[in-house]
Length: 71
Image (cartoon, rainbow, N blue to C red):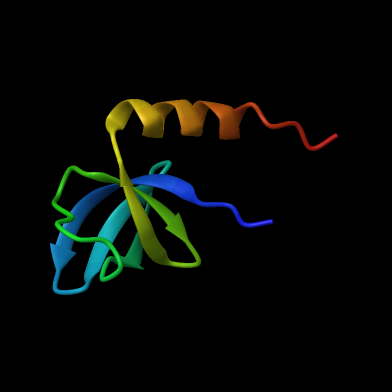
């Protein structure tokens, strides 16, 4: 099973971006997604942005991930 995490793009330089992962900033590759801009939300898998999503979708996905139980 694959899991993609919704993140917000903070900075972009070339094919790389700095993204906010729940308050942690990480570098990701954005070359697979067209027209990514600062402030956009994307799904990230294995360090690559794979799809742009809107803010509402990102918030819903983040809320679901926060509520996952590992029991």
